[in-house]
Image 1 (cartoon, rainbow, N blue to C red):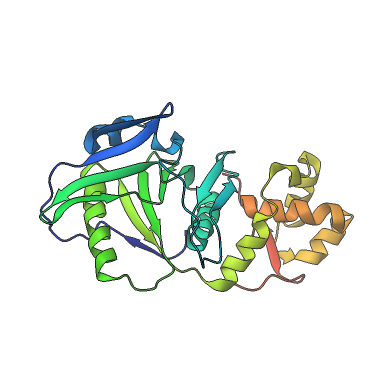
Image 2: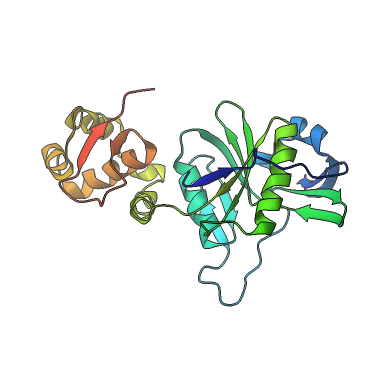
Amino acid sequence: MGAQRDGANVVPVEMGPVDVLFLEAGQARCLRWPEAAGEVAFEQCPPLRPFPARAGKRLAPGWWWSSTTGRLVHYGSAAMRLHVMLLDRDPRVSGLAARPLELRWREPGGVQVHAPQLMLRLADGQAMLADCTTRTELSQRQQHLASVVGRMCAAVGWRYWVLGPVDPVYRRNVTWLAGYRHPRYHGGRQLAAALREAFAEPAPLWEGVRGIGDPLIVLPALFHALWAGRLAADLGAAMHERMLVWAQAAA
């Protein structure tokens, strides 16, 4: 998931009851947070509101097709798009939604509102909220917000993460593999079996590919298998034709 900070390490803050706003069947609903956290499948909810386009930003808001859910996930920044991509490849993640809820609470300074950028459901049922940043260090305001939202999540058995910068080599490699995430690149059972056999033991990428057949057919299937985790490689190093690839043990 990239660099992450867990909001569970919190400082005491005086808060009133927490409400949550979300969309259900196209209509806005507002519930107490403890009730909604246990009853609402937020990973199925649409964005509460779209991310706005901002002048001067290098990346405009857009939509990411998720291989995990088979649906589009909205993103509003380069940092958010990056982490949506990484979460989409993470085998622990079974559900993913962009800004499906807004938390509202009262502090001594007045009513506070925050809509976490992401909600994800893990395969074991654990629910999480997350925000994305390009900063290695959080501002005082961000630290306070992470502390408060972390406390809210911990109170209902959820977790809260702040997802930060990612190693640039790993980012480039996963970005490349993401271009082959769609099932159309699978190649079929026969080719998938051939890939597992060719890389049953770690072997150079090009050697294994040429041993199977036409690289124009085999390479897309290999990249899809690397995205899906059926094959593995050291994605923290630059990808090249001699990189070692191996088959992952079946789950």
